[in-house]
Length: 146
Image 1 (cartoon, rainbow, N blue to C red):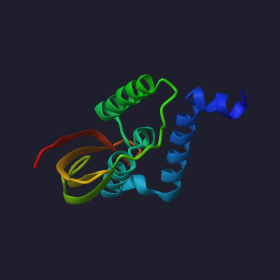
Image 2: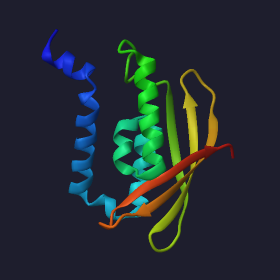
Image 3: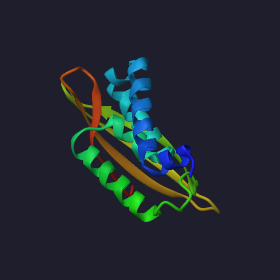
Image 4: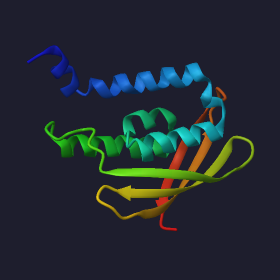
């Protein structure tokens, strides 16, 4: 078995993606703007379906939720399923970004288009906190029917 295959199977690929995401975010300085962090989280989590990269944008309960989702996904894949198969397309629009001080909340309207037709609408609610270093993270997120 090649070294690359063993590396991918070991789960280190996820750590590498997380580190890369953190470096890119730090280089862009985008973590100092609550709206930019919220939009990037929605892009990464809902549109790209990439929990591992979205984890870099979270703290607290949101981090715990994503770690649980990643663990369940790894267990469900069992190493044999295709990882990047896209079954849906997701479009979004931010409705609001509110709050003062070290807390913000953002509301999004999600338009979910499953492969093969049809459409679903959901609303996503994000809570963000500013950390001691001045960067913002998603601390909680949830979805609901409109």
